[in-house]
Image 1 (cartoon, rainbow, N blue to C red):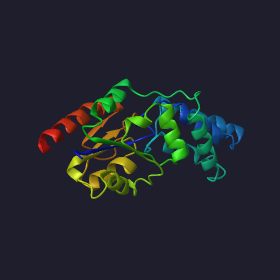
Image 2 (cartoon, one colour; image 1 turned 90 degrees about the vertical axis):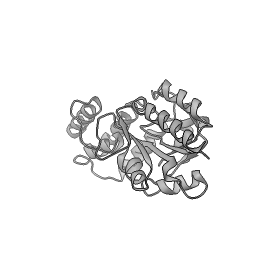
Image 3 (spheres, one colour; image 1 turned 90 degrees about the horizontal axis):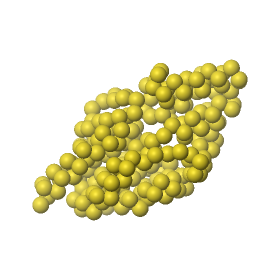
Image 4 (cartoon, rainbow, N blue to C red; image 1 turned 135 degrees about the vertical axis):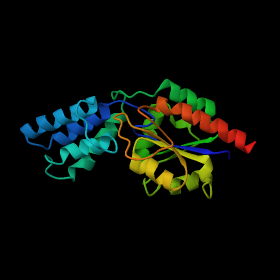
Length: 227
C-alpha cells in the first residue's frame, strides 16, 4: 500500500463535552456533597477553558480533578462503563467535523485509513457506527493498548514491518498517539483543544480541521514520491 494514516478515536474523530461531564457526574455520586459541588465546578472550569489543568486529554483531566475527593479508584471503571453506554445512545450530543468526513471520503483508497481505540470493541465500534464513521476506515482496531500497542497496531495495518516514512499517527493524547510514533520515526499530527502540547509533533492544532491541511499535503507528497 502507499501509506498509512492511523487515527485515534476518542477526542480525535468527534468532539463534545457531554461524555466528560457525564463521566464526572457518575464519579461525583460517590463523593460527599460539598466535595461533589467543588469537583464539578473544577471540571466545568477545565472544560470551559477558564481554569484548565495539565492532562493528556479530558478523560485524564476528569480523573486527576477527582483524586482529592474520591474514596476509591475502583469506582472509576464503573463510572467509565456507564459513560460508554451513554455515549452509544442517541441522547449524547457528539459532533463529527464535516471537513473530516470529506477528508476520509476523498482520501480513502489513496492511502490506508485505520482507527485505533483503547476502548473495547463493544464501545468503540458501536460508537463509530452510531457516528457513521465505521465504514470510513479500512481497518478499526479496538483494545489497542496504546501507547505500547501503537507499533503492534501499525504492524497489523501494514500486514508486516511498518514503513516509518509512509506512516502518520493522528491523535489528541500525546503519550498514547504522538510520543511512540515519533520514537518510531513516523510523522505525527497532535490535536489539543486546550493547547497542551508537551513535546514536538510534525503538525499540531486545536482541532482536527487545523491538521487536515497537513494530512492532505502529506498524502499528496507521498503519492508523488512513489509514482
